[in-house]
Image (cartoon, rainbow, N blue to C red):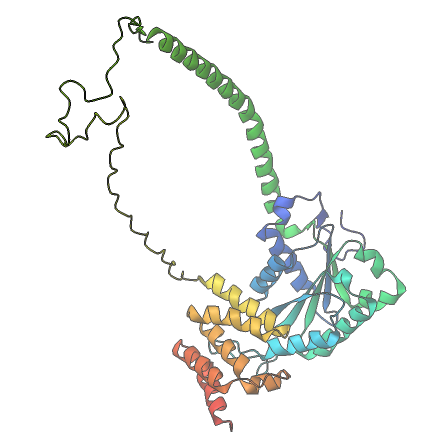
Length: 401
C-alpha cells in the first residue's frame, strides 16, 4: 500500500525492500519520471524518502536522461552552512554556462536548461534553511527552477509540525523510494522471478555439490593409499658397508702418499699438492666468475585511454556541479580532462572559467580570470567544431585589456 500521505498514483504499491531491484537503473528511471511529471505549476518541490538514504548520483543521472534539454540537474550537499543565496548563485552559474556544440544558453532562451536542484540529506537542514531554499526556488520561477529533497523517512514526521507548513504547501509530490510504480510492475515481477529461480537452482545444486565433494574425498584417499603402498614396495635395499677391525685398518701417513705429487710442484693436471693437508681437507676450488645481471627495463606508463561519450558527459557534469558550488579549481580539473580527450563543450566551459566576462556575470569575486588562457581554450573548442567558441573568442578579444 502507498506510504501515508503520499500523493503518488494509486497503482504504486509499497513492497518489501528488494535491494537488487531498488538499486537498478530501471527503478531510478521510474522514480525520476514520476518526479518530472509532478514538478509543474507553482509547486516546484518533490520529496523522496527512504529507510536508507537515496543515492543522489544515479537519481541525478536518471533525471538528466529523462529531462533532456528541459532541465540542468545540479547536485547540492546539505549541511549547516547551506544558504538560499548559495542555491540562487549555483542556479545562476549553471544557467550562464555555455551549452556547447553551437547551442544557445538559458540567458538567450529561458525555456531551456532550467535548473533542477537535487538536495542530498535534506533532513540536516534547519527550518530556516528550508525556508530560504523554498524562497530561492520561487525567485527562480522565471527560469522554471525546481528542487528534489532526498531525506530519511523520519523527515515526514517533522514536516507535520507547524513551522514547516510552508514546505507542505510547496511540495507537489511525496514519494517513498521503495514504492513500485505502475510503469515498472512487469520489470519488478521479472526481477522477483529471476531471483526466485536463482535461489531454486542454488538449492538444487547444493546436494550435487556435496556429493561431488564426497566422491573427490574418497578418490583422494584411495590415491594417497596407493601411493604409500607403492612407496613401501619399491623401497631399495640398504646395504650395510663392511666394517674393518682396528687391526685391519691402515692409517694413511700425513706426508706425501705413495705415488703422490713430487715435492715443490703440482702434477701435470694442475691439482694442488696433497701432502701439505690432512686427508680429505683440500683448499676450496675457486668460484666461477659471475656476470652481473642488467637491471630490468623501466616500466612504461600505459597510454591514455579513449573516453566514451558517457564518460565525457560525466566529467562535464561533475565540472558543472563543482562550478555551481563555487569551486572553480576543481571544476577546471574535470573540464580539462574532458577537453584533452577531444570534447568541445568541455573546452568551451574551461575557457569560460578563465573568461573575465563570464566570471563577472556570475558574481565570482577575487578571481579576475586569465584572458590568455580563456582565448587558448576557446580556440581549442573552435578547432574541435564548437560554433559558439568563435563568437565568445571575438567578444573576449574585443574587450580592453
